[in-house]
Length: 362
Image (cartoon, rainbow, N blue to C red; front, top):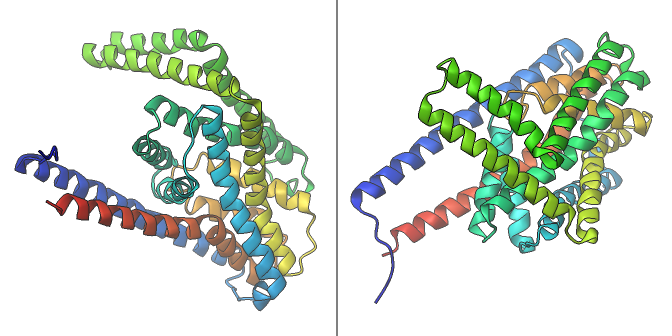
């Protein structure tokens, strides 16, 4: 006898309405991403580039294409491997096909949802579909992000305070100090979550209790939030300790691949500038991209759209000719974001089409 589950008409209708609602939100966020991106590029063209833009065929020379293509492929490879080795340290593994599919789906969702929240959720759902337990899936994606954040948040304030190319901006020493303090607080928070979870639980639970006493939280919601806060913090701390206690080679490789991923990400503008015959020190480009990425972490727009282009144009306006500023900005965003998003969208559509076909099959 077949054990195939048959949904009732009401369940089917409910699922259809839920999917339609999710699809509508996704379309709205995608439109917002495109609109803000266009606004950011217009701002660069209008304010920093002297309303000039020109394509330069030096970007299409054989040497340039080989260098750019090789670095982009390495960038995607490092992105997949940093999650792969994190999962291995936690005692799980994914096939390479599934892993790199996940890379592109993450790129799509994380860039069409505000504050890059959707990418992590989509990855957890995808990992669950491939048999990774919820707690470990959440831990793997969070640990992968924390490793990158630790590198960026450590280096960005240092570059902002001491990189000569940033000294011409009014927001150097004072802002650099402020960012250093903020980064220290941010990293200290994660350190407490990981190693002194109960120290952090006391003030957080006290804050929830204060909201409850002020009638900002009802009894049921207060109890639910208090339970979930304690459960998730302890679960993540245990998972991170399991990660650190995992085989050293996997932990070391996850860290090395995270550094490799960031180096590829920050090196792409340097390759573009070299292709256009700009003689800009690599450390300057590396520092500017580190600070740009640091700012992008706090952008409230989907995928930091608009803001990332504006920050990039602001930092590079004195280093590039006007006709190249928009060109390099678009090329940088296309290679690191738009290309991966497009591949992720295609893969997502194929998955949705396959699921729809399976649902309709009796």
